[in-house]
Length: 279
Image (cartoon, rainbow, N blue to C red; front, side, top):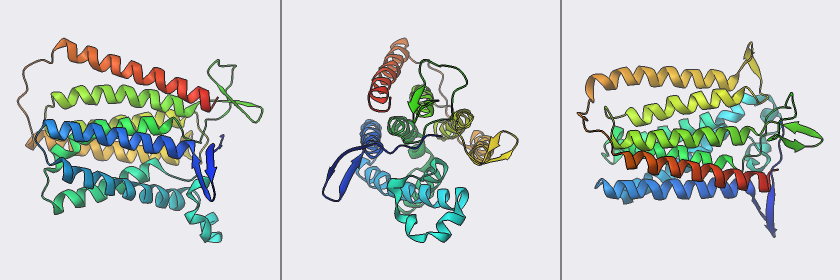
């Protein structure tokens, strides 16, 4: 597994890394999209913005804590100061989702926001932000078995571009969720489909990465993804019983065309940036 945190420039003690830049861009794009949709739906976008910003911070903390606890607790017990060295890598996407979601739920309850409607609204923005941030991810896949033309050469090895696999699938999921947001069958459907979709994506990509395996070819990340899927499926059954929406009108054809072109554009631009910097 390749690990190459790529610095862009330094100014005194401050260093801007490619991964950090793409995380920032992804967060801004996702936030702007969520605000635009909140305005269109007449929701309190100022309150939503505050919740998203705080949830991002909680997500980063959750990502770090879960990585430390699940992936390498012995190392961090022996080197406690390293807990704060995030620039050296060590964030769990599952922990990030969990941390952001737990804080977001608390924030929405405190401010009496419609929880399922709000979660549905942010789901497409969330997966879009994740896809964009993956462009700069420093963790590559394992060695390829054949000379794949899209492999990434690092330290004399040809590696799977695991980040590219993930952001390509993320963008496809974004397109689906954006269309589903315009015509949900029940409140909570879009967010729960996001959870299931992303956990499946993460499970697929995990097969080309190198992480501790726990059952046959299944890794720790696979186990966390399966837990997430089971929880989401259970909640889907509950939501179908209480939050049905009567949506009988089909979406106009131009909506499908617009989102298809948007996804294609995201894929092309992201691949160009990815291979220009990471390749």
